[in-house]
Length: 426
Image 1 (cartoon, rainbow, N blue to C red):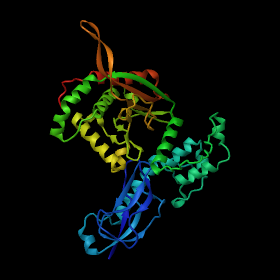
Image 2 (cartoon, rainbow, N blue to C red):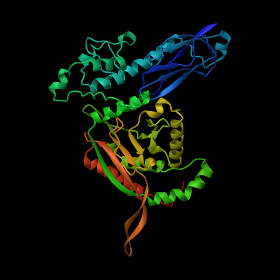
Image 3 (cartoon, helix red, strand yellow):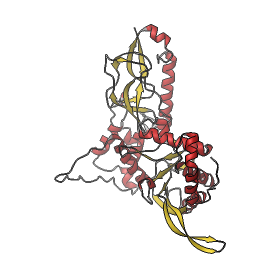
Image 4 (cartoon, one colour):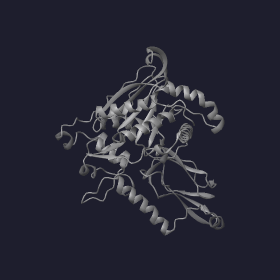
């Protein structure tokens, strides 16, 4: 019998570690190839790790809630030699593969961690670094935080425990005039109240939203767009499109197409902020906020949306939305976004003021499409007609996007919607 290590796979460019949530197989149990062995969670998405071979689980190398680095072995599976030799999927860890895995982890840590000081060998994950920056914890202070991870590495639990036990704000926070971190007062439960603990995803969303408001000074601008041409066009082509492509065509791909065109006109909306540097993105990766059956929110990303035609966008939107609801998205499919679109109109809301999805600097919200009487200019003078109207709102980071840029971008988006050709072929 041979023993094979089950390796923590790579889960996207910015993901270097994951937390073991639940073991789906116990020691001694038989495992089939591609059968899920354990559930893991990153700061982006939950997923499962399947077995690369038939065999028996002989050892779990980590406990639940332990943090595992990409490329590390998480379990040992015992298999017979003949099966191993005939199966190309087996993840046997020969020295060359060990070196490759270690190189992946090392590069990820080098590019996403705080720099080492002259007298420290510690590395810090992006999540730990983000929390430290939010709390005003300096590099020298962070190096003294006790870590319970492998080789003394500081985990999310360690940094949060350190923050909760701090008795005073750090000197750097006070000297710059920044406000001392505020803690919400305890809320007493009243008779008949039901206590519902947040699930892990809701906690992550809450942390991300608070962080975004803390980091970015939000400004929101509004415009009302006449989308009559779009509504009439969709009503005309939706049945034929469904028969031909087997896909429903919604308004979302049309909105994404307008976002892409407006970004090309105003590329400084497609940026990120890194300290005092502005990162101008080369790719246009549009995230589309999707509500889950649990009530939580997830944002799958259409990579290089500017390179997709309307059919391609439609199929991608439908596929991502479907797999989002089924919790089947891969970590790489919800990362790398450079701009986000959210449709608050899907819930009957006419407008919204969305919170920026960090590290992006802007997010567009489209409201419900409503029939309204509107004044129209014609050759014979002004007339009142029934038109399909929709409010659009843009929340943007005032550190790098001023009202002029935000307003012009939003108006250009609206112009593209109103200029939609009702004779467009698809």
